[in-house]
Image 1 (cartoon, one colour):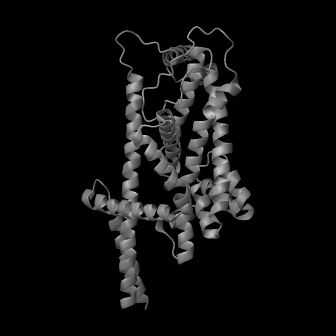
Image 2 (cartoon, rainbow, N blue to C red):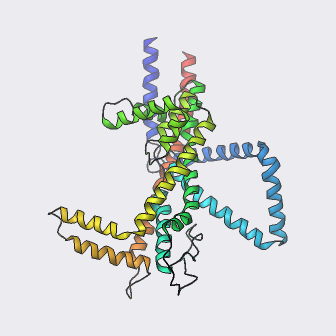
Image 3 (cartoon, rainbow, N blue to C red):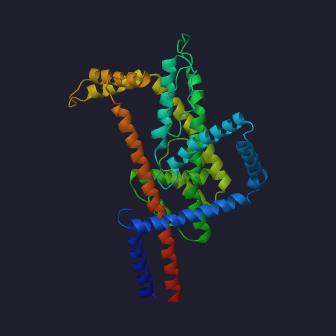
Length: 381
């Protein structure tokens, strides 16, 4: 019996080692094949679930039928265009939120790449225009959105802080709702593992991280214990601040049998209403008062003697850079290298995220095959 168990454990270790080699670099065809199977299965599951939903049958399908009729008959073109715009707007910001948090720590940093720069552009446009009479909703889907001033000769008072904050709240809250939705997979994986009596490999690794004696492990362990003790309110509090280890909260809730609505509603309130609006307040104030940033960096540079430049030099360079962004100033012949490099960084992050996602899904599908093979082996002995 002990010999049989040793043989099974050795086979598990070997299969795990082989799965780790399923990457786009080492096994591109196998990786893409397994990833394609996962995508096809998910599309099938998604279509089936949507079609069976009463919401789809009694609300979504009639609405789509009416929209299709108006779209292709040319009736009510303004209303159809408005629907197209808002669907595109919601999908963009909500989708970026999902991409930010989906996966066990492998999400794309879409807040840094898209949302916070969007807030910066709104604040910058308000400074340039002097009022809020400019279009900012066009800043999506990589469109060329210059936020032109509709009253270029405006000479009234500068927009209030609250006015700026309100302009940023809709995309911020949509993004926050997306981040809450992206936290669902760890919960569902842990929930399914509890119901089946088996633990997913990635879930095991996440839980193992709470058992160490270092500071980070103790913090994660305390977080899990807090959620276990306070339930809904524990999830809400843990989701209401930039918590990089929130995946553990989803896993904890799944393992404890917390209902989906309790987990999701608490996460939605914490992320989409509390955390993201706190971030918006911070960034609006930060971008509205850039001198704080300049003074901070200048003071920091002056505090270290080994830095070969002065704080005044740093402040001057930051002021020039800030003016070029907010006022659209550009020296003759300048090609906008900062924008060029920034775009390439965004593309790089997106590619890294896609590669990581493809490999994770492929390895997970291979693990399902390996588990089935191990079960057959155990039954045959």
